[in-house]
Length: 86
Image 1 (tube, rainbow, N blue to C red):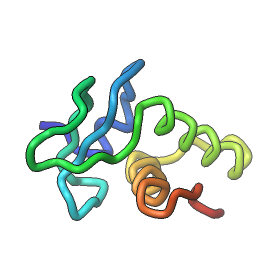
Image 2: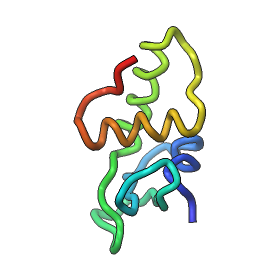
Image 3: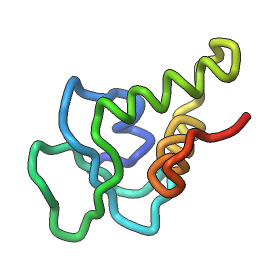
């Protein structure tokens, strides 16, 4: 099973991310079209996850995040409803 960092590194075109809490970059994560997944909590929709990464890059002058930075940005947004500050 993939981790949040692995899923974020290769986001599919659509779906919803669900992950096992407590969320860390290494937490188990799935992407599905389902409304829920047993044992997993809603993280973000794929479209929103892609937006979070774009904002992260924009705020850092185009720098590409590491897989852990990308996963942390997604977790930050999912828990605070705000983009991760610079």
